[in-house]
Image (cartoon, one colour):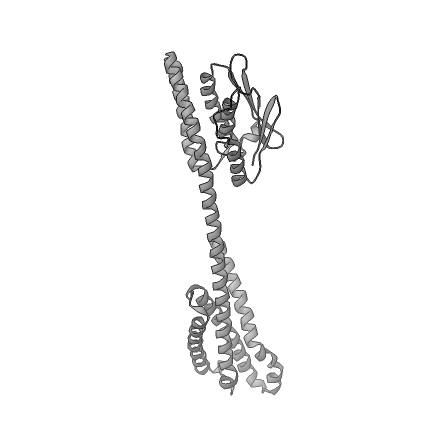
Length: 340
C-alpha cells in the first residue's frame, strides 16, 4: 500500500509539473508562429532547441521544487515558504542562464532575460509556494481527522472494556458459590470437573479483554463449558439445547455476548424440580443467533442491578453497528443477536 501511495503521489506530481510548465511557457507557445515566420531557415533549429530546452528545464524545475515544498518545507507559513522558493528559483535561474550561454543551441533570445525569464521564475516561485502551502493545509487536515478517528477508537475501546468488566465480577461470585456447594457435598470428581471447566471459562473471559469480536463457534465453545458448570450447579435441572448451523459458525459477534443472557436465566427464574429450565440457542436464516427460555418468575425480586441487557445492547451498537431484539411474554423470553 505504501508503494502504491508513493507511485500515485509521483504521478500526481508529474501531472502538476506538466500543467505548470505549460502555464509558464504558454506565451512562448503563442509566439511560435510569429517567431518562425521572422526567422531565417538556418536559425529555426536553434529556435526549436531553445524552446525545447526551456520546456524541459521548467518541467524539471517544477517537479523538484514541488517535491522540495512537500518534503522539506513544513509549517513555516506562507511568507517563509515564498522566500525559500524565491531562493530556489534564483539558483535555478542562474543554472538556466549558464547552460544557455555554454550551449549555443540553447541560446537565449535578446530581451528574454529582462522581459520574460525573470517574470517566469517569479511565477514559478508563486506557483510552488501555493501548491506547497495548500498541500501543507490538506496534510494538517488529514492528520487532525486521523487523530479524531484514533480518539474515537480509543474511546470505543474504553467503553467496551468497561462494559465487559461489568460482566466478570457477577459471574465470578456465582462460580465461587457453585464450588462451595460441591465441596459441601463431598463429591471430589464433580468438584474437579467443575473446576476444570471453570478454568476454561475464566481463560476465555480473561482473553476477552484483548478481543472485541469473536466467531460464533468460539462463543458456543465457551457456552458448552458454561453449560456443564451450570448443569452441575443446578443438579441437572438446567439444560442447554444448542443448534448452530455450520454456515453461521464463522460469523462474528461481540465477545461474551451470550454470558449475560445465560446468567439472567438463573437470576430471574426459578429453577427446581417443578421448574426445569431448557435454554435454546439456535441460529436462523437471517444471520442471527436466537436465545430462548421459558419464564418461571421468582416470587421475590432478583438480586441484580438490571444492566445486563442494556450493556449487551450498547456493545452491539458500538462494535457491530447493529441492535439486538428483546421480547418477552408470560411464557417465553426471547433475544435475537445479529451476526456480522
